[in-house]
Length: 101
Image (cartoon, rainbow, N blue to C red):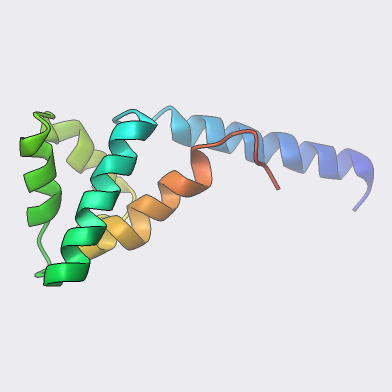
């Protein structure tokens, strides 16, 4: 791959991260808090294939659930373990647009 193609690929990846980041329903700080809470809860109690820990965090933090749950679903978070394995991974990959491969 020549330099021009590498530069185009890098620009495209950065653009994709910006687009993904623009869909985040909460700040990075709140998403990090959500993911830590759900991960700790799943580690301690297992996943019952619901989003009970996710919904508990939303209630405790007085966050309107509609947009968050919709975003989680669009990123594979249909239950608490999927919130951790899919949605959290998507967030990690796209939260820092300065880190582009």
